Length: 286
Ligand SMILES: [Fe+2]
Ligand SMILES: [Fe+2]
Image 1: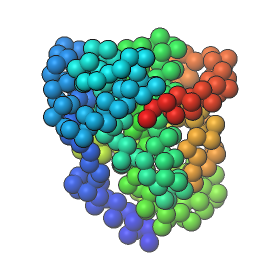
Image 2: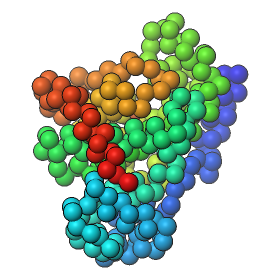
Image 3: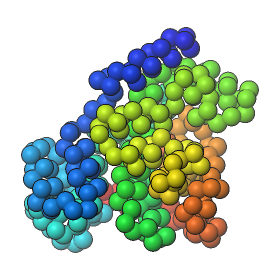
């Protein structure tokens, strides 16, 4: 069975057409907002071309989490009131919801759990970036948080059929679920996620977040900080039981990531203790 699974996954990964897609507008907006000189009206024009996304974006702009108590009635207003980076994050939420807000069978995640996990990691990663004064990358921390586990949507079906072997490997070799996943199936959800982001034409920094969120120490130097922020947010959410599935309860914070972000023990403890606030913030995104 193993050989068949490996072969099938290789086919999927090598045939970009088989990977999940999402509205083109999201890839274009993410790239546009990465350019500091982009004009407000160019971005709002781009969003307005997609009627379905526009409707959802406006709804999210008026959610308790994103709105600043002001009613937002157009994309142009949203860009001025919230700023382009915030609008870009909202577009990503709107564009990825249908892909991530579903049952992820092999990982034992009920409908909505992977979505809530992504949103919680997004909110927490953004909070950490702001706390440590990396405000200019707080929006990237948010986008990266939403999509960091996107590879699970593809791998899930195969994890289901190889589940017994993966768990046996975890027990026999005393390794993490991620390592066993890679050993049995030839791929892990990080690699598949990276391929999905390539298909979506997402920028390199986001691909690095998806690829290295479980091993920030191996991230390229230029993206180590942002990868570390998302790694810490993801690990703390998992330790707090947000998005725990078949990959178990054992999740370790990377010392190198803690150092890269400059997190103090007291700050980490404080974040963990305040996870219920993150859940409240997630509930305010709808
Ligand atoms: Fe992950
Ligand atoms: Fe995760």
